Amino acid sequence: MNRVQIPIFELKDIKVGYGDRTVLKIGNFKFHRGTVYGVVGTLACGKSTFIKLLAGRIEMAGGELLYEGNYFQKNWRGKIKMPEEILYCETSMIGSGGKVRTFLKDRFGDRVQQIKKQYYSNGPRSSEWDRPISTLSRGQTEKLSLVTGIESDPKVLLIDDYGSHLDYDTMRDLNKKLNHVARSRGVTIILASSRPKDLRGALSVQVSLDNGHLSQVRSFKRPEQPRSKR
Image (cartoon, rainbow, N blue to C red):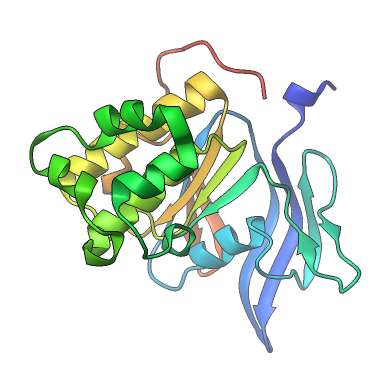
């Protein structure tokens, strides 16, 4: 099996618990390259635990989690060393100092004008460009963290509580963008949400959780586009 055929993540008999309470129990499941997965379900069904497990933020009580066919490495303290190409998208990665344009310029250099055109050039959104990050609303902050995650071009992008503060238009545009970058760049995107209807236009596969168990996997057919081999 060549590298492209090896799943990005492979889970085998995963079990995660807090004390004597099991919050996540997954038999066998594989995440494949260049695909957008939505982990959905009601509150407290295990979505955030699932995302944090893939991000190396929590430990398993049992089972195996493989990344590209290998276990995560650990440092001498036993803490997981996450591969740099896996990005866990969260608002804390953007800080609170400076303006939006300055933050994006410092991070992406000459690409900043292209990013402005794609995300900050239409209508009311253009006013966000020169706003201090500290004055952004929760929705604007979430958008900035998502833009940062997408444009960082990781191999794997993990997003918890996706779209919880986004308006309809922003959500729709980001859904299309996520689906596009998965297909064109070969990025594997795994996001969690309690509102599956809001994910239309983004997902290739919907993974439903019920009380920590995998209850349904649903695939959505989309027109074939060239994929990047990552």
